[in-house]
Image 1 (cartoon, helix red, strand yellow):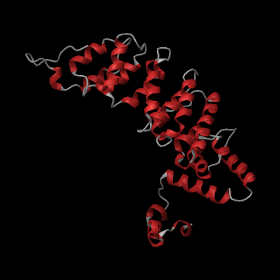
Image 2 (tube, helix red, strand yellow):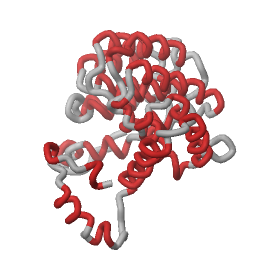
Image 3 (cartoon, one colour):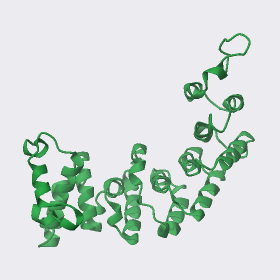
Image 4 (cartoon, helix red, strand yellow):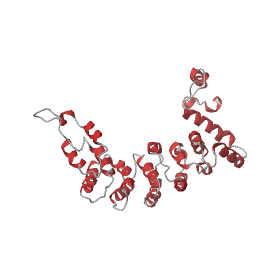
Length: 290
């Protein structure tokens, strides 16, 4: 295996690799980073087991990873690497969501990325609440401006469907720091559309975290009942972004009164408030803030 990965031009000399392999990390097998182990196994499958008798090997490998038609959580990272390295859409289709969040999607072409998204769409029909918010950042690197038209069309449809497909699309978009101007305008239209439910808009606002004027504009529209926010999720998202750098201590209080239910962020707002702003100039006592 060392012969296959040694490359003097890229700096991986055989001598250096052999020195590393003699360290306790490898020689005693006491510890190995899971991602490295998953990649190594997937690379072995892709390089050696899919090379001959391809169709038969593909079915055999798929059977090793699946149980009752599903891939156990413990194997999904390895399988995502295998799908990326082989670039095989049949394998990717078995577990498209984890391919999107764990696979190296930089290896995929634009058309393959589109197919992955469509396979996630199908996946959502049998697993409607599949999206895991803490994995949103794992989608970074998937977005490409060349799939704008496709994403715009899919998101418009997804917002009318009662499953997590729209969360996946928004997560894919917001995980990128460089989405197009056209796509930003589409998100703005969805945010301001009174027919779209509040919880479907909240994560869209992350795209505009540095557009302070726009966030204040939306906050004012919510306050004036031009944009419904019965669950307070829009207010919560914007106020947590703006306070205290862009909304001062006095301004935050009236907005907290706009909540329709108990404000879950009270501790957050108090914690973010400077101690001096909590004290009255005359008595030094803490004010009875709402």
